[in-house]
Length: 296
Image 1 (cartoon, helix red, strand yellow):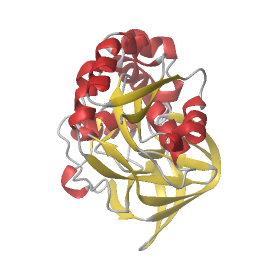
Image 2 (cartoon, rainbow, N blue to C red):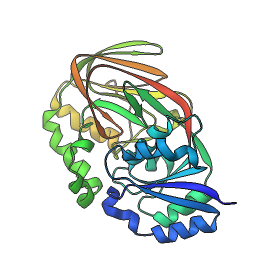
Image 3 (tube, rainbow, N blue to C red):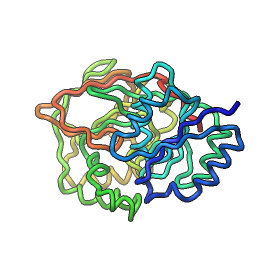
Image 4 (cartoon, rainbow, N blue to C red):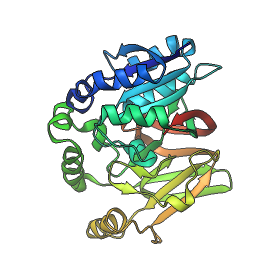
C-alpha cells in the first residue's frame, strides 16, 4: 500500500520555478511508494487553510515554495492533533529555513530525492498573539525589507532584491524604547532591532552562531541590538555580523528563552517569517517544542 502524500505548491514562488523538475519529482515519489495529491495555493494564507483542512488525511506533507509558504503550512498543521511529517523543497528567494536545514534551492527533483531519503528532524515553532510563526518574529532594522519588497522584484532579482531594499532602508533606521520580559528576567532600553528566532539564518544574509542553536530544544533565541552612538556605526557593525558572522559586541544581546513579552511606548511594526505582522503595543511569544518533524 502506498504512502499518502499531500504536496502543497505555491505557483508564485521562485518565478514559477516549480514547473522545472516537477514531472521527474512526481515520478521519483511514485516509484518510492508515494501516492501524491497536488494542491496549488491561490492567495496569501491559502496554504494554512489547505494544511488545516486536509493535512490530517495524509501520512506526509511536502511543501514547494518559499519560507512564507512553509510557515503557512506549519501554521495550518498546528491546528491538528496529529500532524504529518513535513518535507520542504525551497523555491523562493531568501529561504532562511532552507539554509538552516541545508536544503538546495530550486532543485525540484533533487529535493524529492532528499525527501525520500531524509530523516525527520524535530523542529520548534512559535505561538504569538493571534497566530503562529515558524522561525522568526522581529521588529526594527531591516525587518520590513522582505514584505516591503515588491513580489515582481523578488521574482526578477531574487536575493538581490532584499539587499537593495536593505540598503535603501538605512536612512530610515531608528531606535525605540522597549521593555522585554523573558524567562530569566527583564531587559529595558533603546533598541534598533529585536526579536525571537529558531533558525541559523535570518533575512537571507545573517548567519547566527550554530553552536548555540538547537532547532528542537524548546527555546527560542532572543536577539536584541542596542541603539548605536551614531548612524555611521551601523554599517561597520552590520559588516561584522553579515560578513564575519561575529556577534561579539556590547550592542548585541543573544539569550535563550521559552517565553518573551515585548512592551513598547507606541505601537511597533513586526515581521513574522518575513511577512508583515502589523503594529503591536504589547506582544507575547511562546515556544512550541518539537511541534513538527521536518524531513531533511
